[in-house]
Length: 118
Image (cartoon, rainbow, N blue to C red; front, side):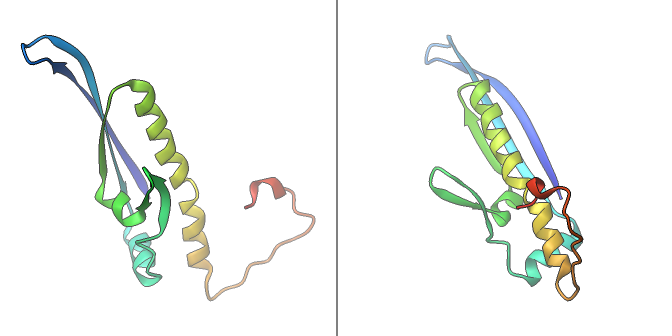
């Protein structure tokens, strides 16, 4: 899995050509490997909700299609970019679990990294 981020900016012009500030654009798209795409298809997880944006669920399918936002300031751009990154942080573990079906897991105790587990 790979997250592709594109950032751009453009000057805003007023009705009479005056400078009205800058508009920032954040585009994100997730690329899945062939194996990951097959797992999502097999387990019907393309509509798995990763986060919500404005009360609307954002799914793996919509993230693969890509999203573009035009924002008024860099702080919001950075914040929204961080939300996307954090929401995808849990997806590698999802793939790990999907790959494990049909096998077994062995956990030795005492576990050393309990705080890192979900």
